[in-house]
Structures are given as structure tokens and as C-alpha cells.
Amino acid sequence: MHKLLFSFLLVSFLGYSDGAFAAHAFSLYDTPKYPAGFTHFAYVNPDAPKGGELYLANPDRRTSFDKFNPFSLKGVAAAGISSLMFETLATGSSDEVASMYGLLADDMTLAPDRMSMTFHLDPKARFNNGDPVTAADVKYSFDTLVEKGAPQFKSIFADVKQCVVLDGRTVRFDFKALNRFSLDIKSGEAVALVGPSGAGKSTVFQLMLRFFEAQSGAISFDGVDITRLDPVALRRNIAVVSQEPVIFSGSIADNIRYGREEASTEQVRAAALAIFRRQNPGNCDALLDLPARE
Image 1 (cartoon, one colour):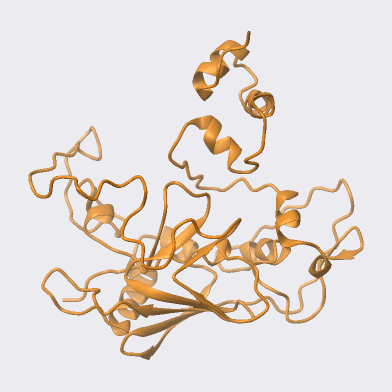
Image 2 (cartoon, rainbow, N blue to C red):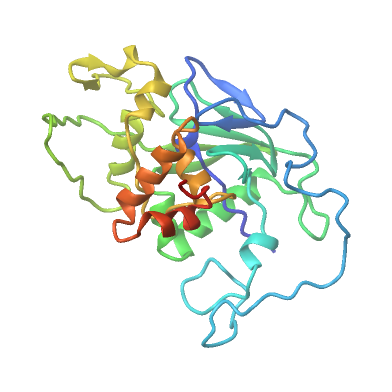
């Protein structure tokens, strides 16, 4: 029986490169922290006891679970099913902002035009019965998830055009592109992009940040073509508020600093107070785990 192995596609987190780029890991802001061949993340204890029993609370306090499939719409899945029983092509680390490392995959390649991502499966990738994980399994899992899974997965993978099996251990994900799209936003003007999943809203944003390169035409800020700008400097001047925000390990202050690691304590405090306007500075410091004002 095929197992669902949905791919962990963080193409929107990939760094800039003029040509095809193959690596064990990709990072948005900096060089990946962990080198090829690393055995464990720094926050993991490799000597932790193995075996035993794990007790998890019910996922819904009103009732217990009634299914073991965490990807379907109806019902309540048992706690920990999706995170403990399924593995993805790549996984993120909890001590970096936006990095992904091969998990089932031992090599990942971003196409020169950033319109596809290729994953090579690690020969050691196995199902729990010992069968090897193949490219056909990945495609089956992806297609099943999009076609029969809960509706949110169609939105999550809206920018993926198709999954293509290249050989027994290699699979490629092709991304959708925008054609004949033109938009002019004047300084100080607020514009909302509205449309169904797959219409290209995320793609416009990814093009602005140079996660993808436009194959024709140009994107300019204040009359300057963004290809003439440093990608890191460009991204530091664009803020993102995700529909499904992610909280990384560490304090709230640490999470605020992910956008600007050199930010001072006063800058972090000001950013937090701008969000929690009803919070007084004293309570804010305790919430952020910052040193109290003298």
C-alpha cells in the first residue's frame, strides 16, 4: 500500500543563483548552518534514550480521535500522526529562519530559471516495512494529496504545475508561470491581488523578491530594475505577513529578530509595542523575555 509522502517544497525560500544549483540544503538569508553529511541538528540529543512509550493529549478537548489519516478533511486525526509517522523530501531546522535540508532526498537541484525543483531520493529512504521509497511513490503521494486531500493542500501547492518521475529515484516538481502580466503600483498606493488558488498571487510576490527570475519583461522599484539590486538588500525592504505564520524556537524577541538579527533591544521592544499597542512596556518586556528597563 502506498503511503502519503507529501513533499516539503520551500522553493519560495531559495537563494539566488545564476545557474542550476544542486545542494544538500537551501537557505533564504544565508549559507545553511549545517554542512553536507551532518548527523543531527544542534538542538537534538543523539544520545537520548530510545524506545519506551509516548503519551500525547487528545487533539481536540471535546472528543478523541476518530481517524489515522491526517490529510483528509473530515474527522479528527490522532495526535502526532503527521509529524511522527510521515517523512518529507526535505525538512526545516528549528534554529534557522528559512533553511531546508534533504530528509528523504539526499540531493536537491533548482533549475536555472527557478521554474522546477528536482529531488534525488536517498537510497536509505524506506517505508516501515523495509521497502525502498521510489520516485513513483512520491508522485503518487503528491497527486493523491492534491486531488483527494483536504482543500488546503490545493492552496499550499497551488504554484506546483506537476510532479514528474525522471527515474526510479529522481522526481521533479514543475512550477506554474505568469504570462502577459502587467502591474503598475504608484508610490503610496495600496493594491490587493485577489483571485482563486493557483491564479498567480504568490508567484507575483516571489518574482518581486527574486525567488524566481522573469523570463521576459522587467520588474522595477522606483525605476530601478530589481536585477541590478542586491537580493538580500531587496528582501530586507519588503515585509511579509503570512496567512499561516510560523513561530521558530526561542523567545518572541528571537522571532522578531529573525528579520534583522542586529536589531537592538529597543528596536525589538518598539516593534513589539507597535503590534501589541495595548501592552504596557513592563508587561511587554516580560512577554518578550527582555531585560527590564532600568
